[in-house]
Image 1: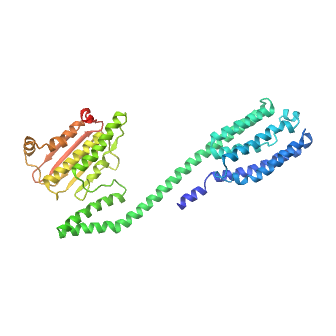
Image 2: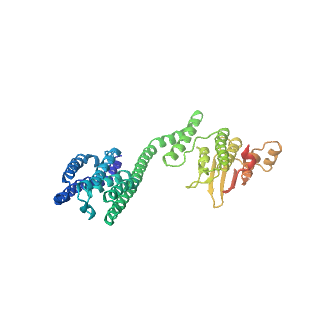
Image 3: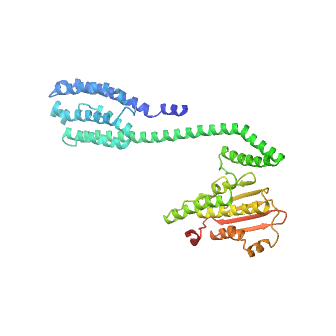
Length: 412
């Protein structure tokens, strides 16, 4: 926060406001000097003196108004511009017609540019364009015709004020970007500090509880298992990655994934289907006995396709828990290939005896056939199951990146 305050104090606007305040004072005295040098040639010098008295008081009294953007209100800008325009339009009343025809200066002279620059610094180039246009119209009315020197002065004020307004807008955008970068840097530093503290305390305690619970057994083993799951989740959180949730049931996972698929169906009907990161759907399965290995970059798939792949992974893990036991370990590997995404689920269970899958299908148990192979078939992918008795089971899910969910399934 302190660093951000220093950035704001170093804002490019502060020097501009200070320069504007000095410019207004100097140009006010310059305009008075021009009048004093040509006093005897004025037709009605009293009008000019009255105007300069007001201008003198106005310039000094409004110095606080041009000290920063907060004090420079819209009302002040309008009154300040009105002061400049009044001086321009009073010039034919106070000055001799011949001096005006010869290109003599207006009563406020270059003080008028200060009023336009205030618009530029406060509101950017659009405000500057409006103010300079008003000054241009007043100058043309004062001269009666678009004389060469008048057009030159008008164009100069126009270009200068719009350019300064544009620079101010760019500078403000750069300051916002810098302030945001400093906030992110500060948040990152704080996250790293918390990660170090957590690693030195909480994570070590959870790891110790997991080890001791496994040794003691009984209810302590269950407590140790829960501590292990929380250690994995917390370690992933403090490292800045995806947050794996504790192990969930197949029904809960299916419900969450159904929400993603439903959102895709609604988006598809509206002509929108933003891809989702498959890693975020698979992270829910990670835990103390399920390890997830994933690429460092997002693995993007259409929402419905990603939901079907994640549901197939959930079905494979459900089979691991059901047939290999709660103590079995599983590994999920995500590979982002150029034209496809490959997800492999492997376990260290006893494996599947030869012919067991065909027998299960004959008995009406279609978990692998429908929950895994059927899901992948619906999205144009394939599912291969490799199992060696005594060496565990491996399920490889391969889905093309341009895969689309089958129309009939999507409409249900």
